[in-house]
Image (cartoon, rainbow, N blue to C red; front, side):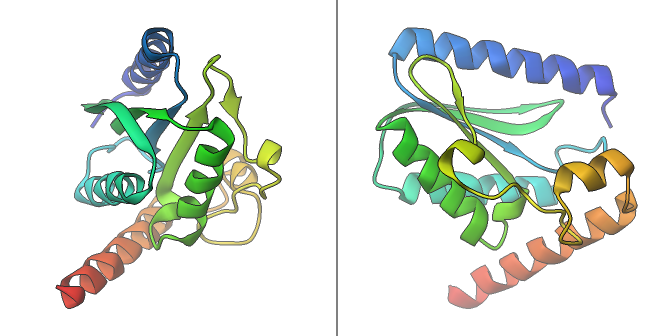
Length: 170
């Protein structure tokens, strides 16, 4: 289990890596992290969600120039530099977040060639809702509306459902 300071340091290191990759490649990038509450950021459920995100991004028709995958104190993360239009990338990432069974737990950020983050609002996409209710996620997180156990149980149930569906397709 990690402490909040380690998570913050890992997020700051991710931001530095993003800036370095944009400066090196002069291309938009996709930054993947996993929305898992609590201090355990590298659980089995987090790994399954992360691998599903990687798979979905690689199924897109974008030309990936380079990729970095890490397991940090803030959890699993990846950065892709992509030869594509940043707005098209963001729309594709929003589609994955909104349509994939585990998409709600994926944080698929897009930065343009200048390092500006493309927001969901800029793409006229709705803010994310809570895992357990229809309120904005930011409100429930700030007010701690739901217990950590309830949130993790919900995530685990979705991951189990995803794994079951994946096994039955094989």
